[in-house]
Length: 431
Image (cartoon, rainbow, N blue to C red; front, side, top):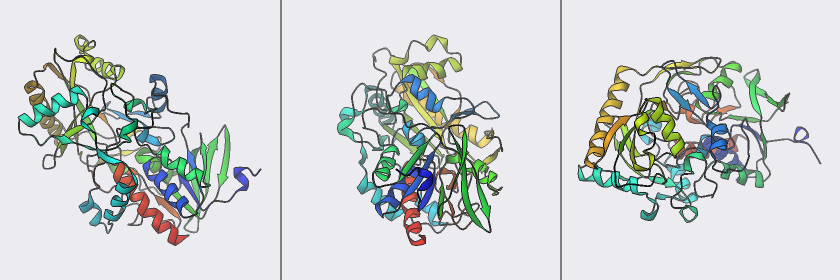
């Protein structure tokens, strides 16, 4: 049997999050073989605390700290951050992309046909989310169910596994696209950390990566870098593209918690419904975390009196569209500070959340410390890549959150799937 080193590939995909997994899957539908290189592991999802900590809470790898000690979380595992995300499917920001000559409408519609995108059924929305929704609607907020990519027949009541990876196959993750691609002949290597991509005469090749303590090289006609908003600029810089990793966004958020006496749950699907204020630049949603995560964030702001109140807590997430700024250093340090505009947006959103909680009968209301998700804009369209997501190197492309050219402030999963579909069509023509 041939080893992977003896095989040839049409493309090398670096990273297996929504963008990279979509490209690999779409290419495989057209008979093209990809080699997918993933730094993380491919262990079956168990939905346990220990496994989720290993995927998303390793300091210096998946858990990063900004210069203001804000936490930034990313998933390093097969499927990337889709494993720990909540399968939200917000429509891509079409106006933003069209300003750069990119029309994603057809690809977004294709994704909607391919995937089970719909709001959760009423029976899957937990009591905390329902109570928050009723309170917000009573105050006049257009608080509605959010679109989710969920196989709802597999979803379970009184379950808190979403944050830790769904072991029941209910929540869509990028692993599903990788599995489809490998079933058609593509190859996956896990524990493969890309160090750099060699370049010569405006061409990228070979890809140099470490795996099992050894260093390897592999070549292909097309290379797609999809290592995420932090990983991608680091690989680009080590490959000679030094303008990546500057003036980015990372969707900062705060959780506003309040206690009610007549609630005893704490296990439900997060981000079931919410409200977006486009003018103010923030989104509010319910966000019921597992008890152990709730206690970490509660202890972080010294609310020790609330540590035992998880099952009686109504939590509202306030997430903003932050101003572009900062840089990713060559060592992967996130140097970015929240400016006055960002803090004002968060504060206004938190005030609305507190109003909703008070109307729901909550007391002991408090805010958590800052955290961030979805880092992007580190290899922007119109800056580092063109409208086809190609870098200055003829055969090197980027397809992840790093290409989004402006801060957006919403979960990017459907946008990345749409970009992946569009890029795959372009690559088929190239190949």
